[in-house]
Structures are given as C-alpha cells and as structure tokens.
Image 1 (cartoon, one colour):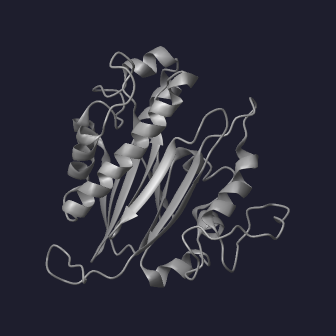
Image 2 (cartoon, rainbow, N blue to C red):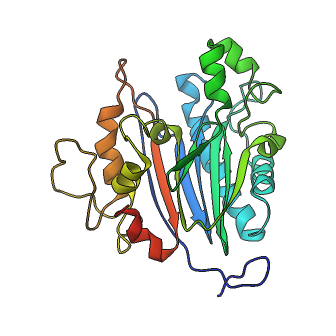
Image 3 (spheres, one colour):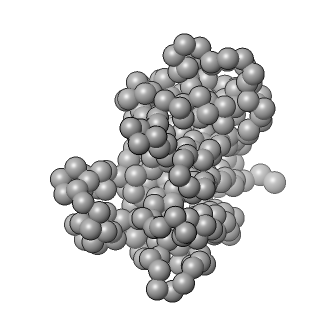
Length: 278
C-alpha cells in the first residue's frame, strides 16, 4: 500500500534499524519501536526500589505498544498528541500507592519534506551534526542536585517533564520540524550522553552505529575482535547491537555501573548505507 503525506504526495519508503541492551543492576528498562515512517525510544526513568524494576519495565513496554497503536490509527497526528494519548492509555502496573512509573521518550517521523522530532526528558535525537535534547533535567541536576529536589521538580513548572502519570507532559516536550532531513538517530541517554565523550563527534556516532543498507534490523554480531579503540568506522553487515556491546564496557562508571543503551536509525533506504560512511 502506498503511503501519502498530509498534502497528498507519496512518502518515500523508510527503514528503521535499532537495538537495546541492558546495563547493570536491573533488568532492561529501555525499549524502541517503529511503524510506518516513525520510530521511537523510551527509557524507564523512575527512581524506584529494586523490587519495582519489573513494574517500570512493564510500563515502558506498554507505553511503546500504545505509541505504535496511536501512530497506526493516526499516522499524521502531531507527535505531542500521539504521546499524550499513549501515556493516558498505558496501564499502570504495581500498587496504586507506589510512585507512577515514568520514562523519557524520543519520537521521530520522516515526512515528504524532512522530519518531525519530539524529545521529552533526557533521550536524544541526532540529526546530521546536531544532537537535539531536552536539557531541563540536566540543568536541574547541575544547579540543584539532590534527589528530593529533583523529585519535587518532576512534571512541575520550572522543573522538568517526563512521560508518566501526567499525559499533558507530552505537550511540554521539545519539538522541531527539520526540513530536508533524510535520516535521524534516536538514542536513550545511555548513548546520547557519550556523544562528545567516548564518541567524540556526531560523525563518529554515525560511523559506529550506522548499519549497512543490506543488514537486518539486528543481525548476528560481528565475530571479528574489536580494534584497539573500538570506536572506528565499521563496514559490512554491522549490527547496532554489536556496536552497543562494544561501547558498554567503556561506559562503566566508578561504581561499576552502566546504563541501558538504545539506538535506532530511521532513514530513507538511500541514506541507510550512507550512515555507515559519514
């Protein structure tokens, strides 16, 4: 079936390649998905006890399912509306007196003339050389510190906004329409935080994570040993999952922890192979 833009022109075909790998100390609370010409990433962001990790992971998975349903039923709806409706529809796991699970979100849609992008909380979207982020939480951590202060600022004016118990938070997301864009990379903060650090430049990120156009969404990881740096350009059938597994050991902090890592490339087919050559 041919897909059409809101103004009636056929939309070019779109591909999505991505992977999530678990960090340490908890089960995987990242997820990603795609449908049509859209893709998204979600990162569980609730400060909960270890016993509640299953509830966070379940809520993140359900929110992803709800986003897919909203995009399938209304493929041209504003991304803020899609996320608002998905949050409102997501089932809340766990006891009613427990903190509502929450998560960061990034959604991108390739259109006939570019891309629409939404970022809520500290996930990120790489567009060319520019990393688009919602920096309100990062600014609070730098300026205020302390979990109690951060918790009080959650989904509050003057604080930061996250997908959770307040569906209207979706309308506080950072949104952009980007003309002329053919590909974007969506990342949870485990990956986005490393651009400019372990991944020195945007070009390095595309080289590390960009799959060849003929690769499967998550093919068998390369068997060749990593290079000395582990972050150089890659060639052939490259798995995003394999690249994330190479990156993870370098991210481990002084307490021996690594965050969950998720990266997704949404691109027109002519741009998928170019991603690995940028």
